[in-house]
Image (cartoon, rainbow, N blue to C red):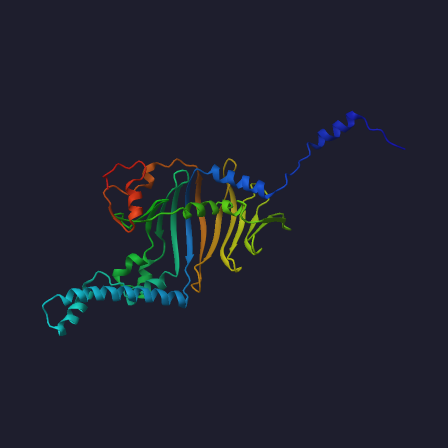
Length: 353
């Protein structure tokens, strides 16, 4: 016997239950569009964070550092010896003159002076204030050393001439064309080569998938994890070797919680873990805890960092002066092309520097 159901009863049942929610299928294309939208929504960023850094203290890196310092000292000694050779003094006294002038140098970068700093900086702890203008490709990083430097000087026997290498307090202004490295008291700036990696890293620390991983060059396989998160695995098209693995939050926004990148030989070259996601602006979520590790190549080991975000503002107004050095600061250049980019930077009056 078939039971008749009136149309009005059907309508009543559906109105009481509410509309049926259908979750759209996640595909590589939808992820690409979603994360492109995430990146486009962040025009500027202001972050205050505490960063714990562990630098590897491997025999290979220590030996390479010591060898480099010894070569620098030898080159300086050779230069001074050449100058001494022009003096009208007996040959027996030229060595004494060379040694005296070496001692008169502000710092000779000898391994005996610098290596204690290298050991002391195995573990660093800094407070960073990062202002990033993504549209203008400008970033200012103000870094302050939080360690007890007096205790480190005594513990490792660090000489006064190496204090500037011990203290990691510094300010960096980074653009695509040049980088400015400001000293601790903001009296001198060095112009170095610029780059865009810092902007990409900031987006990754927001949980945004790097665009290059989803641009089609790598076949990507998606799967569901038992906890409801999504796994995305990319491989090299020629060998099938896995080149990256991503773990994504299901909702909201499918942000990253884990990214592992591999070399062509399958070695892990970078690892990023993100957690403590918070709602920071309409439609914008960001992680407040990050752990990173990156291999330095060969047998040098890996550098690890832990980021604890104290505050984070999305799209704050950033004045152009944020990315300028203090007026009257001395500027020296280490790269001709970077120097030209610095002199011709937008909004800069020619001849001011």
